[in-house]
Image (cartoon, rainbow, N blue to C red; front, side):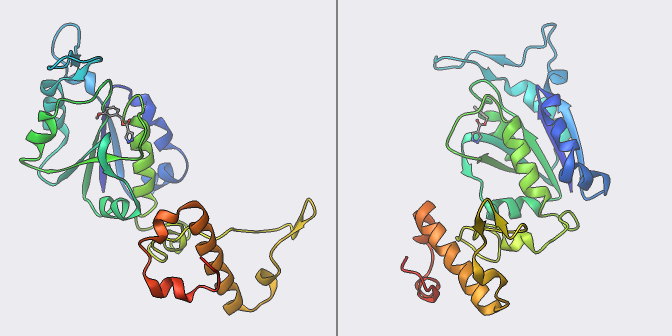
Length: 242
Ligand SMILES: COc1cccc(COC(=O)c2cn[nH]c2)c1
């Protein structure tokens, strides 16, 4: 997979050179290139934005500048991802879909956004996904790109030390719609608190039942909206009153 990011602040993407994502690049799991949008501005002042038609506060990023940037970076096999509060919601399913792409180009919007004709023209030749990472407004798309690249990269073959965790995580493929149960490790007692006895009972069936019950209990308490989509027999399997 190749990932290109176009941004006014290339240094914002430096964290992608660290840790799991950085190592995945070094291991050749994917290639990452970051491009400065301003290099595609042609006037003397390197203008990338202008006032919005229809009035309103703030500035909008110019289509002609973005058009030149995408001409240079994107092609017919590209999935163009535009992080925006107005996008479809990112979830683990969408992350997995993006992880299957050959080429992702992330367009980092700033100000009030990008002239809509950029996405409309791009959609004539490539897949375009306007994606939100949550219902709040950031100053620009860069942080959302860090989130999406990490969510995608950890799903690429060979990136996770333990591929199993991509399945058992909250929202992982293995337990759609349930939050992950609480986790414990040594020391056995921490500030007077032991761990749940079942976890050292050696009774694997009891452990599995405890884990599922804790997942259901936690989901019911924190994300009742997720329970609504669980089918009846999943709930029936539980030993807890949900
Ligand atoms: C492209 O247009 C805009 C306009 C305004 C801000 C941004 C940056 O993205 C976000 O703020 C965001 C993404 N998911 N949740 C919030 C992009």
